Amino acid sequence: MWKSMMAAVAIAAMSTSALAQSAFYEKSIHRWSIFGIPQSTTPYKECWAREDFDDGSQFGINQITDQSTMSLFVRNTNWNITVDEGVTDQVRINLYSGDKIIHSHPFTATATSDKNMIAIYGMPFEYYALLSKATHARIIMPRKISDMAFPLENSANAIREIGKCLNSARGLFN
Image (cartoon, rainbow, N blue to C red; front, side):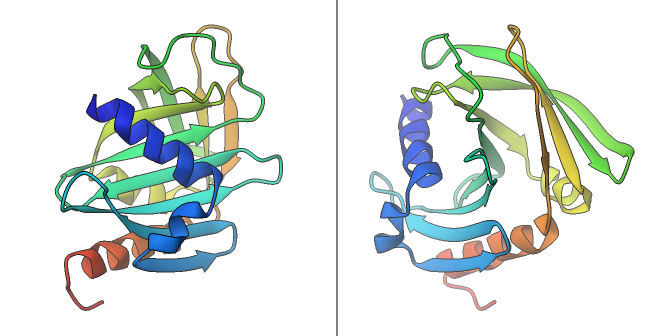
């Protein structure tokens, strides 16, 4: 149930700026939009960083104030994921700095109701440091779904802004 609700919020956060009306934090850096929104069903707040690509695909990072893990959401306009919402499968995320792989790890991805989007819940908090160092990434998908390679331009700045958003959500000074 929680993952289904989280996916519904993610679909909204990844597709429109409708949530910006209730945002307590907003910042833009190149192709990144960073914003903080209150959760409707809990007293906690969540912070998002979303990178938008020219073809309409997106990479999103989500952190909720009461959790020690983060979630990733990836939308690829070329995907047509045909499994039901909530079905999980293994994906591999390769992070690169220049031409060199700096990290490669399998993760469990969850299908969402958006057939172009996957969610990866429970990412270790330490993954922020790896994303900050990466210049681009590749997600290797299962089930003959095309892989997705994308730049992570200004990811270190976007991740710093997530930290500022979280501080703001907790009532701390930046």
